[in-house]
Length: 175
Image (cartoon, rainbow, N blue to C red):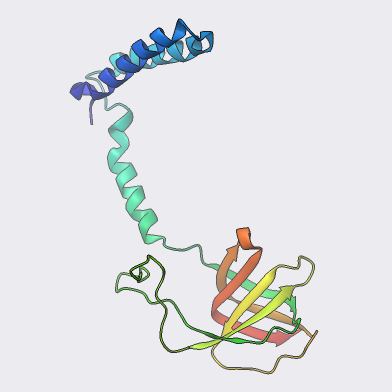
């Protein structure tokens, strides 16, 4: 997109005049006026030569579609040392997904889950950090209280919750 449509010029000019009027009341805006003036000069210099700021619109659109395809930040975890502190395993109901891989939402905007469980979610505590570690296994296994295990698989590091959630290829072995 070129600068020919005058949209940005009109916008910047309006901002510049507005800031000039505000300057009478606030001296701190002077720097902003200088920056807007310089931006307006640069835009005029580029007029008709090369695409200006929005010239990368095609690149940004491609990046946006790529980001939509990257629906998750799935990580591989190998042999994380954990301790079982007595949490009972719970049934795992996976989230439903559309044919394009996006999650199915209900009428309230929440993710829909399967009606039938596909495995068991085990909860541990990571040794040394005390992060919660949840591991999904297809079969129910016997876990001993206060025993150390090494867990592996693919999942998510949910930093805001101080939790690792391993939902794919989960494996547990004694440490």
